[in-house]
Length: 354
Ligand SMILES: Nc1ncnc2c1ncn2[C@@H]1O[C@H](COP(=O)(O)OP(=O)(O)OP(=O)(O)O)[C@@H](O)[C@H]1O
Image (cartoon, rainbow, N blue to C red; front, top):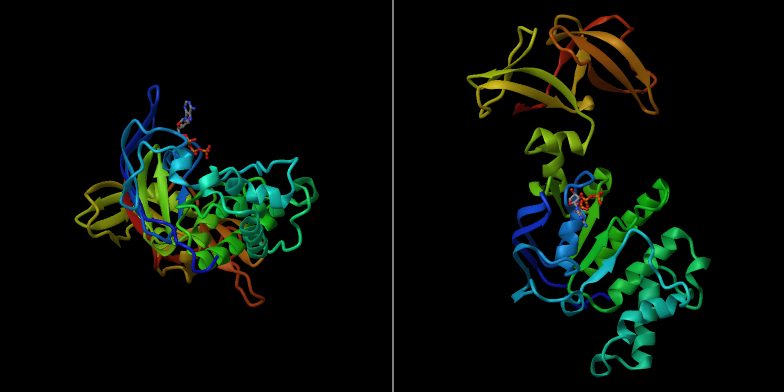
């Protein structure tokens, strides 16, 4: 595979798709560079699958254009676009061997473009090695594990040298441990092949670990596009902050670039945030408890031990919801007692208008 085409860049321009009164996609603009691995991330119903299907040519858009390199593909069929597609469910042909499954796309080409038998055979062997299942060509799908079946589905999609590889929750049906193994495997495979890839997931860990860039969707619109670091460290909105990981929220007001939590005499820098009601968001590991009198004053309302960390629930005067704070649990960790009053430092946070 190494050295074969890396696929093309993809341009999605003003793409819209409605189902009755629902806008499944609303003026979506996105550029995906050749060789990039991009994750489409969002909750159920945000439009991920619709966007993937529009890119594939499985679903016509109501508005906008899809470009594959310099080619306007908007009106081309799936076959004409030459995309590789993998679904959540294995969708292998049960009556065909693994080798026949992988060869299917090449064998069903019109005669003029169909490679000869020996070439197809070589290609299948090459792909079996790539998916780390050498010697498994004569097996039937039912003789494979779920993870192996998905690797075969991926080989089948790659066999046609697709312009782009489109994956719709390909590991969604597998158990958590296999999912993690397979996504790391997919990342290594991508590093080897450099194939332009678009990957749909609702699992933020999967998106952050796997992708070069993450596209966060909300109600058919793009909420943020960025590298995993950018998305995690600088979420563009409260929606992204909340979706990407655990969040603690403090209610308050912004005036002249300062955020004041309700019920607290303390202010925090919030330069650039408009005056008015606002919320401060922080990750539970980005807060530090300390001596009473330092920073905000908080009372420990619950203590939850976990493997490797302890989560405290802290009550703050003037706040309805308790704040979650994580302490790393090592043998020397001082855990504040239930009901104790502690100081609270917030070195990293973001403020969003309400
Ligand atoms: N065939 C359809 N008919 C009517 N509405 C649809 C159809 N397909 C999708 N929708 C609607 O379009 C919106 C986007 O759906 P889509 O399947 O793209 O979301 P998704 O982010 O992929 O969700 P999931 O993670 O649940 O697959 C949703 O509101 C959905 O109800």
